[in-house]
Length: 624
Image (cartoon, rainbow, N blue to C red; front, side, top):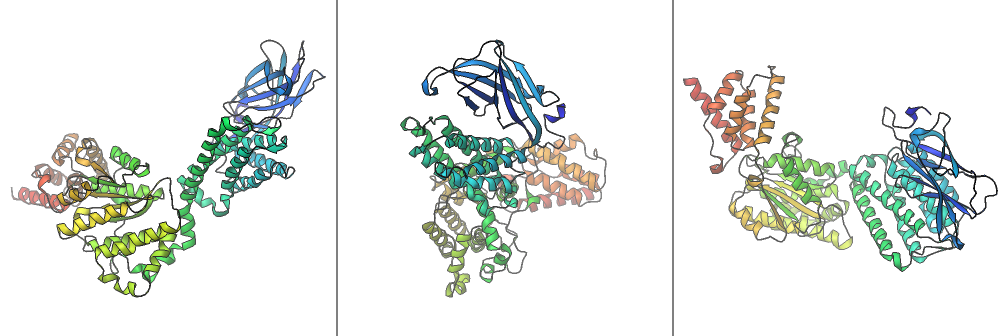
C-alpha cells in the first residue's frame, strides 16, 4: 500500500483502515486446548474471537475492525486450560505497525518463538465518517434480530441518527471508538440469556441521552460548547460499553454485582453530567429558534424596557472594537474565565481599578467571549457622558430585556408581569420595585416551576458602576441590588467592574460570602501590555497615513509608555490625538512634552482629561 494511504491527506481528513481478516497459521506445534485470538489496537478495548476447536493448521477470523492509520497493533493467541474460560495462558504474540502493510493490503509476520504465522488482510482506508456510519448501522441492524435480551440497548438506535446528522463532525477517533464499543457491547449481549439488574439500569441511562438529535441541527454543532459536550458524551458512552463487556460473564451479563457498584454509580453520574452539559449548550439555540428573536425584539411590551426609545438600540451592549488587543491582559482575562466556569459560591466578581487601568476593555473582551460561549445573560456598559447609560433606572429593565431574549421561560414570566396595569405603572416605579418585578420575582417564578441547572452559570456583566447615578446613595442602592441578583439562583453570576469607590467597597465587602475581588492595580505590571498596544497603534497609524513604520522611534515609544504611568487610556488618547493631526512629528513632540497626569486624583472622565492635557500642551508649544 502506498505510504499516502496511511496518514492524513493534504486536507487533514481523518481516515480509518479496516482490518478485514485475521489468519493464524500454526507451525510445528498445535495448541492442545481451545484458543482465543485477541487484537489490541493502542489503548482501545481488545477485540477477540473464541475458537473451541481447531482441527486444521489455520484459524480464520473475519474481524471487521476499524483502526486509525499509523497505529500499533498486537495479535495475541491465548490457550484455555480450565473449564468455562476462566483462566487462559498466552500461546503466542505478534506486534506489528500498520505502516508496514504491503502494497496488496496484507501483512504477514511470525512470532518470536516461531509458533505461529500471523496474516492480516486490510481494505483500502475509508473516510472516518463512512466507517462510523457503517459500524453504527451494522450494530443497529443486529439489534433488530435480538429483541429480547437487547430490548434496552435497542433503543440506542438514535446513535445511527447521530451519525447521519453529524457525519462530518463525528469523523474523529472519539466517535469511532464509541461506535466500536457499541458494537462490542452488542456482540457480548448477543450471547447472554439474561441481563443483570445493575447493567440494565446502566443501559437505561445510556440510551436516555441518544435521541438528542430530534432537537438539534447542523448549525448547533458549530457551537463549540455543543461539540465539546457531544465528545464528552461519546467518551462516557464508550467507557460504559467497554465496562459492561469487561465485567460480563459467559452466562449472566455482569457480575457487575456489588464489587463494581461504585463504578456503576460513577458511570451513571457521568451520564447525567454529560447530558446536562449537552442540554445546556444547545438550549440557547433551541430557545432562540422557538422564540423567533426578531419578533420578540419588536414586541411592544419589551420595547418598554429598552434603554432609549430615541437613541440607537443596544447602545448599552458590549463592543468588540473596544475590547483588549489580542495577546494583552491575558492573565486578567484567564482569572475571570476561571471564576465564570468554576463551581464556587462566589457568585459576584468585583473587578476594580484606578481610572484608565483598562476596565472597560476587559469588560468588552469577556462579555464578547461569554456571548460566544452562550454564557452571556446580559450586559450594561455605564457611561457618565450619556444620559441613558448613567441612569440607574435603565439598568434593571435593560438586563431584563437581554435575559428575556436568551431565556424562554423567563421571557414568558416577564411578559406576563408586564400585562395590564403593571405595564402602565412601569415608568413610575423605583429601582427596588423594578428589581422585584422584572428580575427577582420573575426569576424565582421560573425557578419554582423547573429545575434550571447549567455546568457553567450564566453571566451578567455590568461595567462602569461608578459612572452610574448622581449620588452616593443611588450607587449604594444599585450595588445592593446587583448583590441580591447574584444570590437568587445557582445558575446566575454577576461580573461588576468599577473604580474602587468607598461606597461600593462598603456594599461589596459586606457581602463577602458571595464576593470575589480582583484588583487590577495589584494584579501585575501592565507595562509590557501597554508597550504591545503602543506598537500596534504605531503600525496602525503608519498604514493609514501612510508612513514608514519607523515614523516613531523606540526611544519615543519608551518615553510615552513611561508617561502613561500604567494607564492604557493615556496611550489610547495619545494615538487618537496623533491621528487627528496633520503634522505627526509635531503631535509626537506634543505628547512627549505634555505634563504627567496624576491619575490617582482624577474623579471625572479620564479620557477627556487626557485629551485636554494634550491640547493644552499643543497650544503652549505653538506659542513658543
